[in-house]
Image (cartoon, rainbow over all chains, first blue to last red; front, side):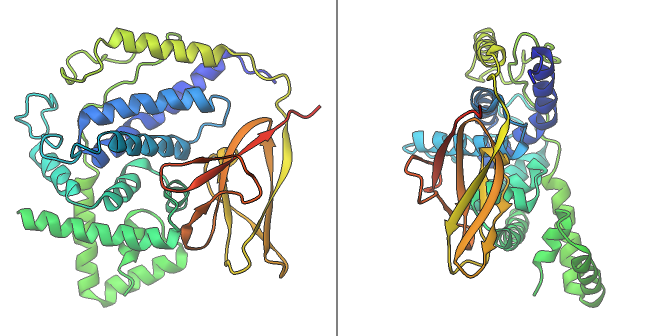
Amino acid sequence: MEKRYVDRVETFQTFYNEHRDRLFGYLLRKTGSPHLAADIMQESFTRYLERYRDRERSAALLFRISRNLVVDQVRKNRAETVYDDELHGYRSDNPESGFGVREETNRMLAALARLDEEERDLLALVVASGLSYREIAGITGLSEANIKVKIHRTRVRLKMLLKGER
Amino acid sequence: MKDYLISMFIDDELDLDEKIEFVETVRADKRFGDEAVELLEMEQELRMDLGPVPEVSMPEALPEPRGGLSGWLPDLGIAPLAGFAAAMALVAAVFLLRPEPAVSLEQPYRFVIYRPGADQAEIVGTFTNWSPVPMRKIGTSGYWEVVLPVSAGEHRYSYLVEDGRQIADPTVLTREQDDFGGENSILLVDAAV
């Protein structure tokens, strides 16, 4: 059963359209850096095509690849502090951002940056990916029960951080 | 306290019994209800629109990205984008145009792991799209099994065991490290004749 080239391209285009915004949302919340998020998103789709072109399209797999790429990146830049103020230079007055980002967005990203790595990763996945706790368990290696507890604890902590800033 | 029900409510993870419990708790416990409202309001902010999302360079055969990237993040660090698009097109051409294997039928494959003390065991891998698939306990033997259709080719997988730990298949020697200190087993399945 050979699929035609056009069919396969269309399938991937649909998959890309469905998940591009979600993936970027995850990466931006996770890294705090639009530059890094854009680079890793590009690399994620490239790697997906390279390695899993014949597989059923899977959002869980895409996010898993992306998550691993962030870990690689952080490992590479271990000497630098990834979540420092420079990378979180996400203020609307930052000439590099080019986003015209609203104040609330800055405030939220700054608060996310103060969560610990695992908390931020989990919350970004839950909020942005549209995946279930079960699917996220498959990506993170955490149990579903553990996710239930951790995700709530993280939300409560984020709320405290946001209040503290006000 | 079952405060985590609030997050499960936000994330659409409650089953029917839990929904009843959630609503009854909101009704009976003002602090719980207030907390739920505050977290829902925070969630609106958390799920805010993040502004323009960059396009990924796609294969030439695909429609051009809407709007393009010009003007987006001048210091993106991946300019010139033409070079990037060409690289992506090349990757796509190589992989999309490569002929399909002559035989692509899936074959049933039995996975077994010995976890005598476990309450549950699951398998994740390329053939499950990395979604966990529960395994079945084989009597009181301590073994867990599952039979899954696996296509010909190279696959990666591991088992999810107690405490959400991810372990490689102890009976398969070919492994690779993942990025979380765990290991995936590598399985080569020959095409069926």
